[in-house]
Image (cartoon, rainbow, N blue to C red):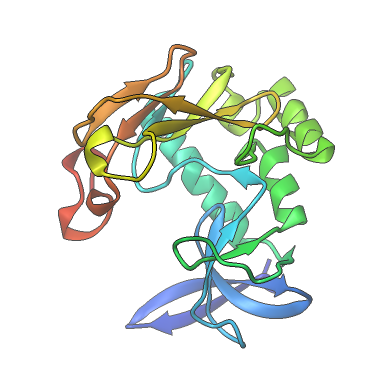
Length: 227
């Protein structure tokens, strides 16, 4: 544990750091949540990572709900995924390609399996193709033993993101659904306008509170997210 966690004073506050091997080179990182981090040292210092192959629940507030879970309970589980990521030493590889937000795309096989096996994440692809076999086996085992996010119900899909039709994104407006059996993504096309703090529910039982990105953090944080 001690080897996995380092601490750095930043603007007068202790900032938890974890060790991650990036293409074989150890580097200190800060896990913003259970599936993303910022590199704090080395040649990639300052870059943000988008981690492929899995998804942890949103940790900016109590926004998820399904089965017998309350939103607050799933929010706590999302925070547990962040803590689990911070406590480990992980190995990630990348061709250093970036997404539309400038984040480097990384794959961290040991982190993926650990988060999924503990029920702190689910397998996920961004296409209609299923996730790799080892990830699906880990997810099935976690579901069978009702670990983590599966303790109080397993919906057919998890609603992982919402978009309001009036937000002006190019192309058709959709919400993302991810299969809890295969990890494949499905686009839920719609033409609905959502207000901040509106709960959006899919017919298969997974719900998510819609909050525009600009209202998730800081002084403009939506009231429904708490303090």
